[in-house]
Length: 377
Ligand SMILES: *[C@@H]1O[C@H](CO)[C@@H](O)[C@H](O)[C@H]1NC(C)=O
Ligand SMILES: *[C@@H]1O[C@H](CO)[C@@H](O)[C@H](O)[C@H]1NC(C)=O
Image (cartoon, rainbow, N blue to C red; front, side):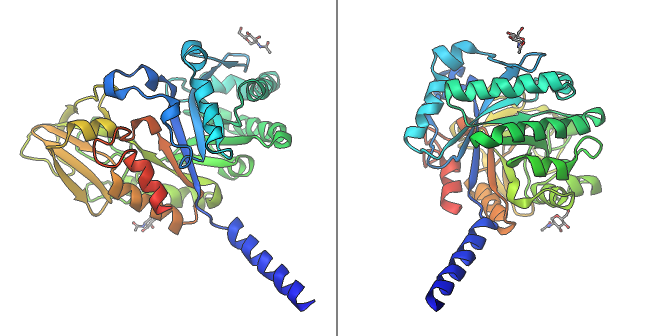
């Protein structure tokens, strides 16, 4: 009897320990258009390491105005084998969750708003998801709504609750990606937290060239050049604190890691500290080609001779050469963010996007950022 009690007791302890504060989730967004990047930028899903990523969020699928999922790029998704390659990763890790992501910056507010508002369209979206899971093997849906407005606040929760109920029998996963700054009049944070499996915090793009001065893409803590408002809202730490204070379950939160940096063109090459004046965005990456953006793979390939400074206050590096400046993340800053997630008992990390890691090993270790996450979890 005593032994039995003891066993039961230790089981309970173990159970409690494991259901509280385990930081083990790595949500890897995959940009399905990475197959079209030129030269050394081309990346196919078969190159994702599914022993490190626990979830792959496939960005993006579209949605018709009636709620039904829409393939934006049937050639890439089907003919070129993207869907199939993602699914095949489960042969390496059978526990991998593959997730359809809808929304994103380009989709904007307009598409999701009327769907969330209509019982018929919500039902269409759910039916369409279940059909995709059946046909292609996906395990869930991610809603990346950028961004709901006050009129959408209740509808958003209704949408999430109905999806959650419909997904439960099949064990499907529902995640959302959210603005780092809690949008008070559009986000019912306790309601969101209650109805989803994971809330992916988009804790990046905090400083861009439009701000007129150099600044960090994804600082862990506030910096000296920040305004009072920025200190309270524009870094990873304040984001996590704000979301938890407003009712998010820490065990459902992931910190967003940017596998890219924002570039700046210095007004005066002699002024290259944080907060220095800039005239425009800096160079674009030759593969990702985004305005004022370079992937970590491109940073590794092209900035080997730039001067690197580690900003000890914000816990992220920046680099400069001549009139070019970039704020980004590397192995050192990623390791500190992983530690932060563990210290705060968060679910884990989210990556935007896994196809911009140093997958050719140009900085050193192949998949250096992903490996850093693995080594520090
Ligand atoms: C929604 O619209 C699309 C595109 O017109 C159509 O293919 C699909 O069948 C519609 N879905 C439903 C449930 O009516
Ligand atoms: C983290 O953020 C909270 C809320 O903004 C703040 O009170 C705290 O001082 C921050 N921690 C650090 C180390 O900056």
